[in-house]
Image 1 (tube, rainbow, N blue to C red):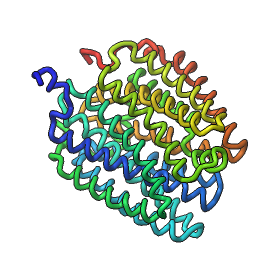
Image 2 (image 1 turned 45 degrees about the horizontal axis):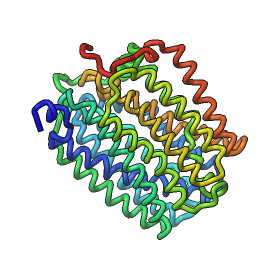
Image 3 (image 1 turned 120 degrees about the horizontal axis):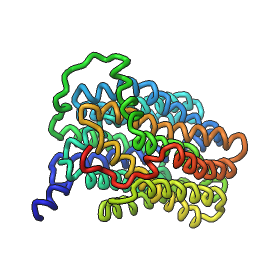
Length: 410
């Protein structure tokens, strides 16, 4: 490998290799828990409202903690913060094991654990996202982001399928396995060399420092447009919360079918992440992101109308591939243009936007499905996603015109 190739290869860094391994193990455990939790809640309640409530209680701690989690990530050891978050998730997995045994009487405890999981991720996600760019040289940042996304999406393929298969043996098989895996992830992240933000003196936590990340994003229309577009697209077009309903009532499958459906969207993500790692976006980044979200909305509509398992999987695959383009552009913009001393706070704001699009999107989908039915809820969301793209193309002309992802001079 020549010097130029080595400088753009994220795996040349020992610490990044360990971070990558952590990402896979953590991602597998998290995805296994998600599919098992969704099946557990719906099998006990048969309620779209209950599924949506899980999303809401997962998001609220993220929203509240964002005022301090980014500041914490910018002031303290990001590796240690991530370790603590993974440890809490291991404890929560044990709690979910008890909930599975308790049945419907354990539902309030499930909501409490979902909130705790959200709180742990509210601190560990910004710390982890801010840690990653410090593990590789700037020339390897795009490569690291592609492989990082690929690791997460690979976990999101294998994790749901594995979780669905293990659930057939009983909830203990899933939640017991994820407990061990979260412990392994904690040990892996702990083996990375300690890194504090460079040239960062201790700052008192004030409202000004808490809001610094949002002000930074708001001052950059391209970044703000990309993050907010991703938020509303997934908020409206996300069908993940309703997958237990589609799997059980519409497509007539069991936990294994739910696992395959969740895996399909991630298969598309991995396919696109690997393609982007090999052929990164060098030109027309903004327009390609906008068109990718349009395709995401169209695929969402197809999934909502489908009554065939193979067609549903194909639609989800396309959704995952299109969403990965959006994720790639958003993450590269955020990580490439954010100073190291600000990465924790900016990542915390990004986590809120992502949490709003995922967990709050699950709540929105659950409430809408409870009112009009699962199929209309998904179709309406897909149409809304396409409408948002048109609005954002008008509101954020800088995003629409953005060519290069990382300018040579910032």
